[in-house]
Length: 121
Image 1 (cartoon, rainbow, N blue to C red):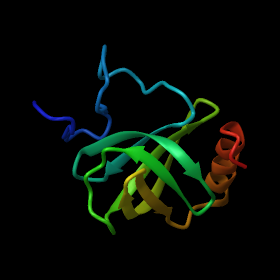
Image 2: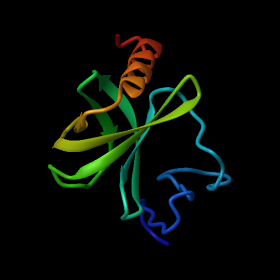
Image 3: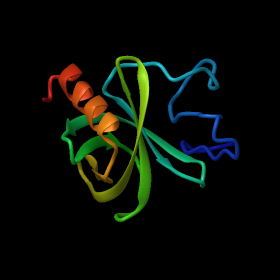
């Protein structure tokens, strides 16, 4: 399959843009690594967190989705996955800005822990 975007039918299968080695291996990397996923469509874009607040984040990525698109943002905090529902608000020169949808208190706490881990709290 050509290109940097991968489609999959099985939600358990995750392949990332620019990944090398075993593409089916569990995701590992720094806390600033992030994936933008289009649920139900199998599109996924890798990136790096540039800015992170409780309301949303700026992600450096080559994501080609349109403003207003509903996405999931896949993060990691303390080595554990954190998936947040979000809306792509704006594409720009530095990447894409997403706004998080309302989330349970547990996810808010995990997001705050990630902000601290990244020195953005």
